[in-house]
Image 1 (tube, rainbow, N blue to C red):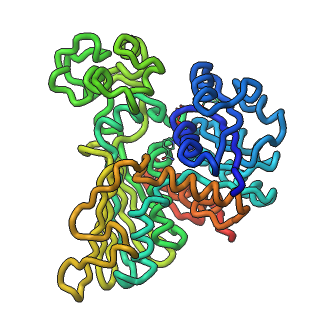
Image 2 (cartoon, helix red, strand yellow):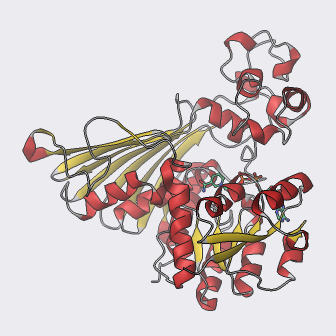
Image 3 (cartoon, rainbow, N blue to C red):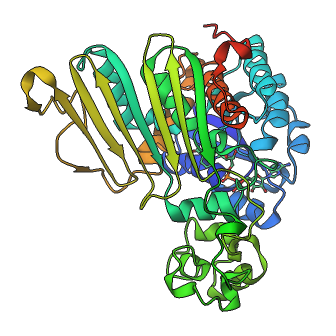
Length: 432
Ligand SMILES: NC(=O)c1ccc[n+]([C@@H]2O[C@H](COP(=O)([O-])OP(=O)(O)OC[C@H]3O[C@@H](n4cnc5c(N)ncnc54)[C@H](O)[C@@H]3O)[C@@H](O)[C@H]2O)c1
């Protein structure tokens, strides 16, 4: 089997996650060069993956100046830094794995998708949830007509109170001027899943949402600017940074606040850095709840709710068809699907080989799966296979990912302009 070689742009959280595929499957995949400006990250990465010093760079233009030195490029920089390295990689003829969202600019999304098509390179988006068994099973149930004609979907993205505080109040995606709106940064996965499951183009979008709680107006009287300032509300505050970051866990999300995860370094990070700020006193502007309604060309209607105020990180979905309904829940360690057929007047237990997880009691997923319910590593397996075989049969291609971005842009526009936004306003038509 030919080993696929890769370069990595951005050795942060996601870059490390995808690179770890090479540790599980060394015969299939190897990272041979890295561009990462943070020296400690770059050196740690180079040591872990055995990358020689001449193949380590502080910035991506230096790496691309070397020409095409591997089969593919993984672009794992922050949201607003996807376009330039992706275009450089396309022009050099790299097959590309690009983190979501493609870009906060629709023009850039379309330009990248079109340029990749012109150059004949793969441009695969990290829509890892498509690759989870739960959503693959739901897709199969729908395609096999198990619930008849799909009529409507209720879908919830349960962000979790602490995850919202970490990433979208104190962290990297808190301010849309620096990254992008919540519906794109977080919920583009859900836009993509809806498009994938429904299998038709979106037609109209309406959306309502607000920054309801994580604002100055909601700060309890006398609360302090930082959790480390001896805030009198600390004991009863679920967002207290000392509880979130100074406990036993030193993996994600704690490792984001400081590369050095010793207790002293973490305490210092809370005293001086963004993650110790009171959740009511940050420079955040992205919504903490948003409800969008979307109608699709095949008549399917969707109500989608993203909300910060949930006990855990999960996605819950109810798909309603003419002959039955599917209810499913995806959490990191537990997942289940209930299939209900109207004529059976009750829950049924379908064939487990054909429809894994499709039962009426929760099933524990094997503990050794990686993030996103196993989607991360399955996405990598699919990408590596496609690069090796030069197949264009990608589950999450740039072209079919453009619609998820348009839905997110339209939802945000609908929310901001308080009106229904027609997808035709974007003048994009999917071409095979
Ligand atoms: N697919 C998913 O489910 C998923 C989950 C989380 C994040 N993301 C997306 O992945 C991307 C990366 O997120 P992350 O959490 O890994 O962020 P991160 O901040 O941990 O990593 C980004 C890295 O890029 C590096 N970088 C900055 N400038 C660079 C340059 N000029 N050249 C090379 N590297 C440079 C940074 O130093 C950093 O190490 C974001 O777009 C984010 O929205 C996707």
